[in-house]
Image (tube, rainbow, N blue to C red; front, side, top):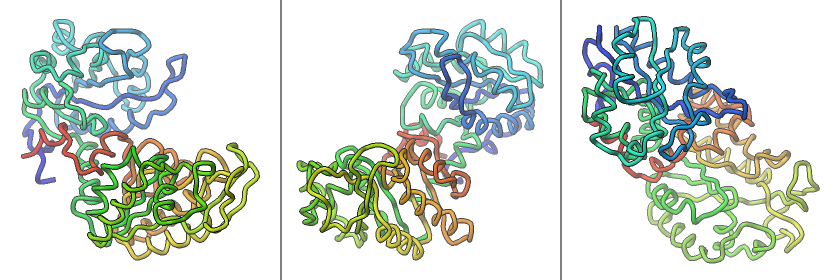
Length: 403
């Protein structure tokens, strides 16, 4: 992490107020009960480390999409109990994030307390990246700690402008994330393999175009694989039985040509699981590509030949980056391929043979479904930021903390 500022660069923190930009945008039910505390739990180590170094910690975060208006539905007051429980310290909530009320609360803080401020997005200035508003935000703070990688692809006030106003650094989570992703894609141990899934080629063009220039092997899966299969001349794939995008065939051919020019091996399905209905446990069968039914059946997963090929290719790799499931993992048995490949990646990781990094909303859910969410080297909960990193884009919230 020598390229970025970390907590060690902040010096002595005794008696100082550290403002921590966290991601506490957790899922909540209709009764305002948190249904998954993962993001809260992942924020705790940085809070504890700052406290250990003698700082008074003020936590800020966005929550939901209130569009610049305060409302109870999107109030961070609902997570106070969960944060307190996870942290083991009293959490004092302030129903604003800037102004005299906040400044007074900071002055009255006790050493063993944490201050949690109200939702940043109750102000439109946050999403606009307003510099004057950022100055007001950091007014009570001596140092600023950025720990919300999931928002690092947005030039929001708390991610960029605020960072410039105080001595600033990555928190432990942000440092861990950037370090893992750098090892996964920017400076990987080779051979490097990527698995990319998704329903449409058109939504992941930037990603595919970047990866074919960087990875040694690229597994294209999910619905987007149907377009590539058609582009290679598999005539049994059509608009009636698959998610093929006929207007993207030339684009798929161009991506494959770029891959060939960059010595990137593209791995496509060799067999598929087809079903008559889009529902769990529907009638299904595994067929070779030349035997895909013309209509009445849909491609919902890949078969054993494809699974064996992907796993064999993985055996020869040192690094794996994964974004997107292989099939319709939300419905059994069409989660089979994703589960089998994920389990194999987990085994190689446990054996010390593979550095495995995965991310994106569907990917995290798919790996949890496979029971391996804690068995990869690193799993990122950041959706858009993870995707933009894989696309090779510079993230504003990361770039601002370069040394």
